[in-house]
Image 1 (cartoon, rainbow, N blue to C red):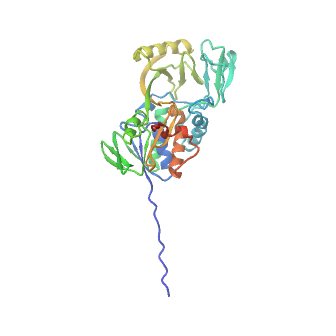
Image 2: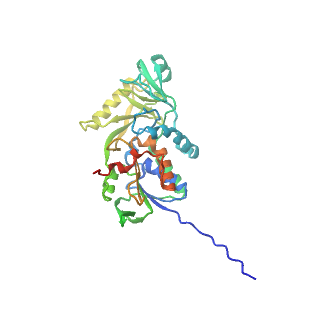
Image 3: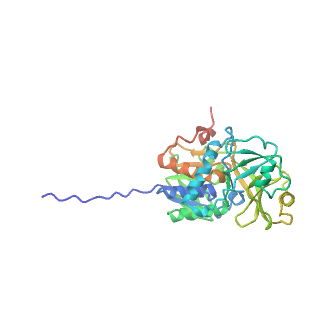
Length: 357
């Protein structure tokens, strides 16, 4: 008689992925990867959402022109956020719609409709002296970016991801032209692939490969006001104010960074605008403000893809990151799973920064 052969169980090793940066982009990537059986370590030099995400306005919008650099991502963004919210209800997205007015208020793009003054007054009764025209995007929403990032990180860790905070990535580890991990302030982390989602920190790290990816800094200001008698129903974006209601009842406002560098002066001007433009906000007071260094690719187009032929280093950077984060997480996960993802256009690839002869 022949002995019955023993059954052999083959245990497949999970691919090790190190994600650098725990802003909302890195958190989304980490969650998606951890949900697909990757061995994920998320590295953050401070705490989750402590960078640009912590000063993000949190506007989720898919209304964009065909010519926009990020049109492909923005058109998919709201669907991806709805998908993510179905899986993670704790994200608590407020699908309030958005109202835009100003110099180009009569030029609608896909997803927007043109409103007249009476319709605007009905939609947004908090506005003092509603504009003659405005563009309404009914499907837009808002998210508390800092809290959403923390929720995504928590859910990623529940799926097996490891979070390392207060850990600075000082350099890439390389062998024979391939990235094999990262060297950090806490020691070395080995990886089959490193994903850079660290915003303005991307340029310095990619420079070590000989193919620097230019990501610039675009500072912006986030402000919070108490306004208990003011009820903003939508996201309002005009030529004088950009505001929405936070989940806790505060009024949140966004401002561009002033050329003068006087942030306090800009904050006081924003308070004046909120008080004069919103009913019930006449006595609103500034709670606090913060400045975030938004990462913006030098040529304006999103950066998505492997930077090397060995597919050991991946870059993910774009603006607006909050709007696109859910889509970016999905795309990066699909590409790392399959090795290549043709849905990402060539003009989004980091290879465009390679010096041409």
